[in-house]
Length: 403
Image (cartoon, rainbow, N blue to C red; front, top):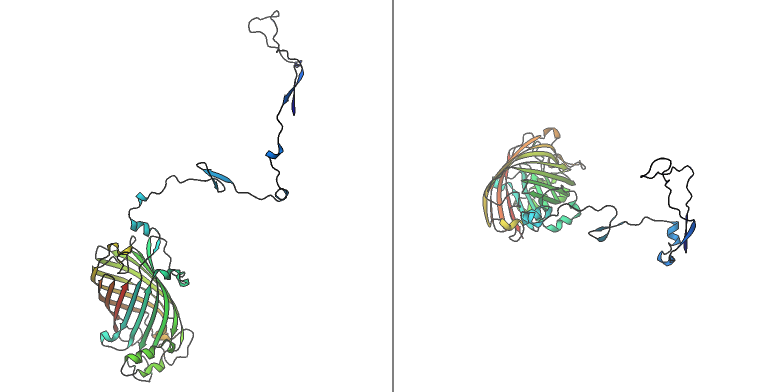
């Protein structure tokens, strides 16, 4: 292969000749560029091999597609389009203050599991009416965080420890005289409900914050077996259960938000707000909670923890103390008094005009725990819930085990 080039020494006629720098005037010699003869210069070039540049397939030529852009980091090829930016500073493990902070840097699911039994009865105040009996079974375990019922639980995007569980609850309510089949106007109606629920308890020791959410589904009325259970407990069968509020759906959601006000070691004063909405209860509440004694931190664990768990690193082996609380509730709807929203075939209910819209509740009790077993007792007081109702009291016992 030849590359041909041409050289031409022809000067333009109008070119101004440059005079010599040494002589001036008409006799000075005239400057002219070097004379180069005309000729064609042939430069041989190596032949180009076609196989060095393979042909592009016809299908790609006809339908071109975008191809990934290749880039490099420190000379290593990566498959990432566009410009790659490196962090100015890498995170160092030395900057993590403690193992605890590393775990709490995310929404951590506790490895602890709990089983609890709660028993309520007004026998502790020597009465047998209104809220007369209640039992609650609770199981908390990490596996319940994968339940399909976990998605409606309240989210929390900051450092926290989370506990998911399931609950089974049965509560019973009777008038002041449960041993008659006659309906007493102005008294409380017979009522009972049974439900199963999913709960989530979120604790942030750093923020001194707690939030709790629960969704429940079940049944109120004869299908909840309240009359059957109370008949087994009493020597004299309470015959008035035939007048109880009839079967209806229970579907309710509970949310609780709690914030520490004063929280030195072995003392807690917290403020909280709660809300319940659904077919069973619709109300809003707010109040104060107090604890004092040799107790584990309120916002770091639910009282108990395994020794080998993250919460149990600094947990106390022996705990004891007192607790007290007060709550004011605004009542919008109470199915145990007014009947369910879907089934109105009830022999007797309390009319909405007789419902007390503000109800005060207070409690005082004690707590004792050794290692992974805890027991507590609280005595509750409730102001009248409807017109001409009495003040009421009952006791609450909780037994819990952490494993």
